[in-house]
Length: 275
Image: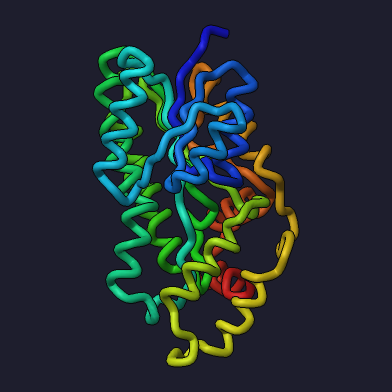
């Protein structure tokens, strides 16, 4: 396979790092980006080609893309948008600023980065754009409102982009994982401690239970899969002649997609309220 180039965001750990390593082993030239310089250094030490990219900073996005295009003589075959975090909290406890910050990283940064690379892909006549969404991009769970909203918005924007890019040679896919082994809960708990005051909330008792879930080591729900499960779907999205619009990962994603098709909203709410 001739060398293909791909830009991946959020490679400091978990899914991003796994996909970067897996694709590098497969012969891709991987540009593995991360927000913190320490993570970039660690990725470079591990043999990956890494550079800083902060999705909440337009200047950082532009600098990273400029460097990558300079290194590849203006070519980029694929983009895997993955860098994101989960903001816990009841909807009524989310300030405007907290919600805006969630969208800056999980949606606006992805949108800006995608729009930066689209002219390159149009000029070369081909490209693959893969967005790592979530089962929470089509079903909602309590106390995940900010993350739910960012992923629902991502899915709407991505579906629209896919329609607009028909017949261009640029394919757009969503990957929708359920529970995956990563530092997602650990990172979410750190954000929660900075942004939510449970003592002033009517939900403080429910927050206690949520804190236990976020701080538990190891999987807390059945059917949790390693990040390699996402890697396999990313490879399919990259290498299929006609990639699918959506790739489900983990049993819960398949289950809730099926339930959403056959159950009424009220019936589905009764199930989701217990998760």
